[in-house]
Amino acid sequence: MSKAQSQARATNTGPRITDADWSDIRRTTIAAHETASLFETVAENATLDEDHEDFEDDAGNPIGAYGSPLALWEMKTGRYTDSPNRKPGLWSKIKWGVITTACQEHGIETRRPEGVYLHPELDFMSSRVDMEGSDDGGATWDPIVAYNVAGTLADTWRNAVGDWCTPEHVRIAAQHHMAVSGASRCIVIALFGGVSLKLFVVERDEELVEAIVETIEAFWDCVANDRRPAPSGARDAQVLNRLCSQINPETDVVDMRKDHEFISLIERKEALASEKNKLDKEIKELNAQITAKMDGVGSAIISDTRQYGWVTVAEKHEPAKTKPGYSYCRARKISEKNAGDKLLDLLRG
Image (cartoon, rainbow, N blue to C red):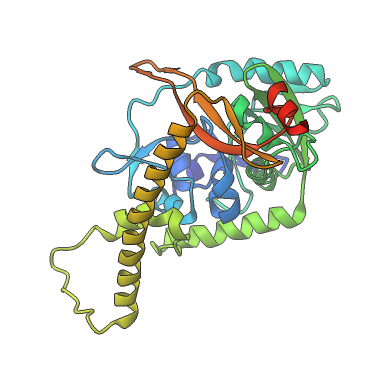
């Protein structure tokens, strides 16, 4: 039994509460922000926030634990450790005021949770929310989680017709919180670009809750029995490199010269690598020729709907150094937003 489980106590509302240290809870449970890693298409598009801790391997190289089930399994089985000297960011200091402001605007009473929740039946499923909210005078309390969203990622919080909505990885995290707490809804607060504040209410989806619980149960069985989950294609290339390179010097050398499938995979990889090198070289040569033709040109019309123009990346100032800005050319759609009067006049002419 883990410290988190041994320090858990029952509540009248369903979930258990533990006041164990978060580092102990994290090692022995799946938290809401980790669940998206178990859903392949969601993990590919998920963005990270300050809840996503940093990790590193034995050599001190940084590792991301949230890209796939295999990467998360690496972390949960103790195959790498927390990255040292990680300091809380600015968001961890200001999000309480952000939550309070948003809830006051919507008439929601708030309170701090007593601790971290554990699922009523599953010791390995936890929920750590930022706050809890009630709009019925305290009769019911819903989990509240807040996100700091970069302005460049704001569009990922819109649907196909442009309406504001929570991204899929956020919805999965919200359903995880509800699966643990038994709540019927979860309040999501997002600060966009440090200036725009929005509040979303995610309703409980019983089918998704059931799928999340079943997925976590299956995954934790792999953790408990040290059984490696199946890799998720190219996303797990680096993970497999780490796992498969840990060779026991006493292990036998295997003769695979007659394993035609294995040999063909290697030959195909080498052929593609050779082809890629040739293509990369040709692309660089073409870029040089195109750039020469774009000297002194702001934008070039290449069809009725597309233009080829310059993109400028601004200089970035970081604590240790400054990254200089740069420019490059690329093709993009012609629209009133990025065309300019002169280009539109040429099209009309």
